[in-house]
Structures are given as structure tokens and as C-alpha cells.
Amino acid sequence: MSGLALQNITKEFGTFTAVKNVSLTVPHGTFVCLLGPSGCGKTTLMRMIAGLDLPTGGAIKLDDADITRVPTHKRDLGMVFQSLALFPHLTVGENIAYSLRIRGVGKEDQKKRVDELLSMIHLSGYADRPVAKLSGGQRQRVAIARALAISPKLFLLDEPLSALDAKLREAMQVELRQLQQRLGITTIVVTHDQREAMTMADTVVVMNSGEIRQAAAPVEIYRRPADTFVADFIGMTNLIDFTADSTGRAHALGSPIEGLAVPGGLSRGVLSVRPEDVHLTAPGHGAMAGRVTFVRDLGGTIETFVEAGGKQIVAVSMPHARPDVTVGQDVGIKLSPDTCVVLKS
Amino acid sequence: MRREAPQKLSDYGPLLFPAGMLIVFFVIPFATMIAVSFFKRDPAGFYSTAFVFDNYARFLSLFFGKVLGFSLFLAIAVAICCILLAVPFTYLLSRASRRTQVVWLVGLLSVLSLSEVIIGFAWSTLFSRTAGITNLLVAIGLMSQPVALNPSLGAVLTAMVYQALPYTVLVLYPALVRLDPTLTEAARTLGASPIKSFFTVVVPALRNTIMATLIMVFIFALGSYLLPQILGRPQHWTLSVLITDQAIYQSNMPFAAAMAVFLVLVTLALVGLTLLAGRKGEAA
Picture (spheres, rainbow over the protein chains, first blue to last red):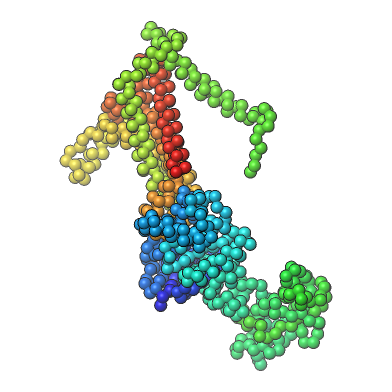
């Protein structure tokens, strides 16, 4: 299979296990985001793919060749570091040409390729500027161009956009995704920003404490989280404890949820319900009873906080469907069974 | 933090103490030395006030020219040896574990506590025929009989490098510790072997620091006058040795002062040239 394959990768630092038995295949030309909180092992995993750290167990294969022990400089990859790591003593053009110079490419060809890459990142004519004179977004683009100069087999980015302000970051996410699709290059991005992962990735890999919790398409991750960690980490969610009786009927917040099928043998668990799937109605009529504690009107969306059964439930609605509620008002909560994801607690 | 430039005369108050110290202990002695360099030597006593160029004229001879040339050569050689040894060493040290770093730095600092005299005599013993390191080489069969390695240029150079190396490392250390380690990692992901990344990234990125250290060690080595006498032959004596000789043993203070002033001027000129070359390189 062409592409990258991680087989049972483990990394131990002394007694601490940073990455536990991780297996993952990244088909050629796909965009994968490693997503997780700090310390979840995502950066360590990427450093092992780059060869900057060696795994204590398992194998890494690129296009069916075992590269587990191949030194970094022989791996034909391009990497963008969180700090960008642009060489301060070189100009923009020299930075981009570095990998070509190291490989002994002729001066003429170097210049041609640099011009090509500069026009790709919309910085034509910047070749002779010192990198210190660039703005954050421009430096970001130069780091990307430098990593892509040799047309690597694998494109790695470690928290590439974290130094940019929010607006620029969102614009760069789109730009990076479009660039990746145009080049068709196998790309892996490490991020802790789930919006970033959702925007760019074909496959989002959610990690926690050194393990992969779920690897799937962004919408799948959002709609069908595999466990409570994934459900809670990706976007906002309401995690509601439920119990199931012998007939398989689920009860939550003191009321039964009609039509929800609980898998056989599961007597208790957690429901994950996205805030936009929580509907507020008039109290009674079989709805769960709650009381509004806070309303956050953000203009684009309205978040209503409701206390029900000792738990805080958040409902999100759009302005045109603004719920007519005030703080302290008693309301009913309706959950539709097809939007409830049943998870083990 | 933004700080305002001094507005009133009283704002310069805190500078009074250091300025006073500088004037009393540096400017006045140096000015005296310059003045003395134009005085006339009095063979019966010390010197008499005058304004003559005799001392400088006497200096313009082939002999002193050669000594000056050798002094500069020796100082440059020491500076280059120190940089060649210290840059790779300090780079590796800055990437080592905290514990290793502390052990090495404490060791280097303890070398600084040794006086030039002790260093000189220690090396003269190590280089001797009877008790020197060649005896070890004989013992392990690499040499057939022990030889004396001093007096020689190599012995002078070794001891001076030994003396200057701790300073070199301590000056380079902060800059190398601050150097972003991802720079060399980036170079490796771009296809450079660890050695290549050292020469294409670490060395050029630290060019200014290395240049400044080179100048510092050069000036430090220029002032050395004991080691060349202990470990070298008369032809290895530096201008500093001759200045000491004139000032202390020949009681010719005006001539010693003239040589010292001349040495300062030549040093300043060389440092200026180096900085100028560095700036040109930067602009290119």
C-alpha cells in the first residue's frame, strides 16, 4: 500500500509511556490531523514519523519500505515546526533553497524552484529579504514553501498555525487545505485546535494519554463520537447519564426517552447530545423539566443554559429560532432519539 | 520595558560612581602611560619630563618588528585554536543533560582559578623529559624513549590555549544555549546530516558571537607574558615579555610605555578591521 503505516508504535521516556501501541494507516494523498490535548503524545508521534525521536517499539513504513531506523535526513520529508525554525542568517530565498543546496542541486535550478514556490505562496519578489523582516503570516508561508521545496513524500506540520492571530489562522487553514489538495501530498498535522482539524482534515485522529481514541472523518467524529472523551473534546456537548430498564427503555434526567434503542445488555451509560439538538419547549407534555439559569446571546447563536435533574444542559439555537425564555423560567427539554449517541460511561 | 532617555543633568547621577572609578583606575593611569612614553629616560634615576619621540623611534627596528609580528601571530593562533575547540565542544555541552553541563562548567571554572604561573609550571613538568607525558607513551609502547617537548612553540601554544579555553567556552555557552534546537532539527528534516547541519546552521547563525569571542581571546592572549618565558625559547617571547623586561629589569619606563601604547594601537586597528570586515560580510 502506498502511503504511511504506523504499526504498534510505542514510545517510552524512562517509566513514562508517551505513546502506547498506536497503529494508523495514512493512504497516499490524504490529509490527517492528530488532535488532542497537550501531553497526549501527538507531537511525540509526529517526531517519530520524522525520525527526530526513535520509537521504543513498533514499525513505521512509508510506501511499504520500513523507515523506523532511517535517519531523518534520508527520509525525504518536509516538516513545518511550531517555532517555524526559519534560519535567521539566510534570506527568504536561501531558506527555501536550503534543502536543494544540501542535495547539490545547481544554482539555476534552485532559483527556478524558489521562484515557483514563492509564486505558489503569493510572495513573489521576496527572495532577497531577510526572514526577520517578514510578518507572522509571511514567515508561516515561507516555512511551508521551504518544507515543500523537494516535493517530499510526506508533509508534516507541528502546530503550524498556533503563533498566528485568530483571523489569519482561519484563512491559513483554508489556504493550507487547498494547497494540499492541489499538490496531492500526504500530509499530517498536529494540532490541539479542533476547528483547525475539522477545517482541513480528511481524517481526524483524536488522541488522549498516548492512545488513539478515534480516527474517522471530521463529521463522523462530531456526529458519532466513539467515547465520552471524544464527544467532550470535539465541540460542545451535553453528557447525560442514563439508565436502561429490562425492556431496553432509557431514562435520563428523571424522564424516559421514547424511541431510543439501547444496545442489549447495557443497563447504564452516557448520552452525548450536541447543544443544537436540544430543543426547548413548554414544560410538561412528557418533556424533561428544567429551569433556565443563563442565556448567552452571541448574535450568531444563542446558548441557553438549563438546569435539569441537578445537571447543566446547554441548548444552542439560531437567531431565527430564538427560544422565548428568560432566566428563572421553567421549560421542557426534548431530545430526539436519533441525535442521542449512546456511550459507555 | 520602555525607558525614557535621561532628561536633566541629575538623571545621570547614578553614573557618577562608575565614571569616577573608570577615570581614577583606567583613564588617569593610561594617560600617565601615554605621557611617560614621550619622556626621556634618566639612566641615573627613573625618567625626566620631556617631549621626545626617541622611544618610538627606537622601536622602529627589525628586531621589534619581528617580536610584534610574532606576538600577533601567537595571539591569533591561540584565538583560532580556542574557537576550533570550543565551538563544537560548547555546542555538544549545550545539548547534554543538565547534570553533565554543571559538572563540565564547574570543571572549567576551576581551571580559571589557576594562576598563569601554576599553569606554566604544570605544563613544563608535563612536557619535560624526566616526568612528562612522553613517559606514558613509552610505557604503552608508542615511543622508544621519552623526549622533552619544551621549550617550543607547541608548548607555549598548548598552555595558552589551555588557559584561554575556559573563557572561550563561558562566553560561547549562553549564545549556544539560547540557540533554538529546532533549527538543527529543521535542517535535518530538510536533508542535512547532523554534521552538515552544524556547519550550515549552527556556525553561520552564531557568526557574530564567534567573531566577538575570537577578538576577546586574541586580546587576552596578546597580554600573556609568563607562559612564553616558561615554556618557550627567546624567539617565542612576545612583546609583552619585552615590555615587562624594559619596565621592571631595565628600569626604562618611557620605552616600555611607548611599546605598550604601540601594542594598544595595533590591537585597536586589528579589532577595527575585523569588525569592518564583519559588517561588510553582513551587508553582502
